[in-house]
Amino acid sequence: MMDFITGKVAGPIFALLSVILLIAVIAVAVVDGWKISTLETNSAALTSSINDPKTGYVVRNAQCQTNVATLSIAVRTQSATILALGQATAAAQARTAAAMAKAQVGLDAAQVAAAKILALKPTGDLCAAALDLARQP
Image (cartoon, rainbow, N blue to C red; front, top):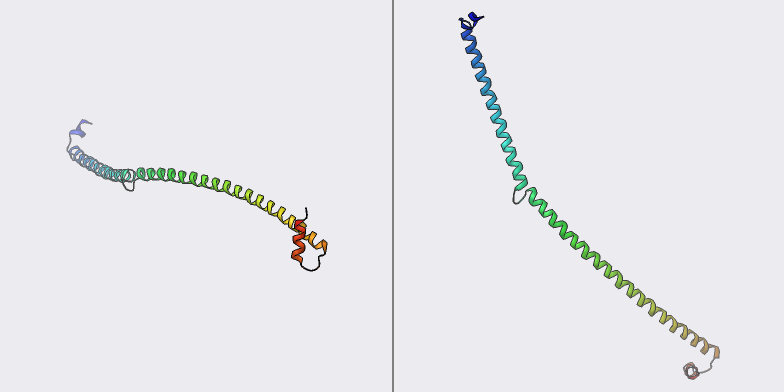
């Protein structure tokens, strides 16, 4: 076995193996360098998409949170306004109902008075008959 290592054939074989090993190591180094470069590029792009001061996710998230806060305030204000309008509407409906009830009482009284006038079957001037009826207790 020793003769093989020190023989004429072993030298060129070891030299060839050394060259192949060197080429393999260089190939691995080149591929790893390319991978590292690609990863660094990807990392820079991702970092930029996260931290870019105009379009990054951090800025967009902050803007979204601000928008949510603004919208929440607007919704609360709108809800309070709707509640106030509902209360004002209810009060106006109550006033309208009271006015209609009062008007109905007046209408009923006018209809009774008209019926009394017509029941008298006045002859001649109806206005004078109505004045006479109004003077009655």
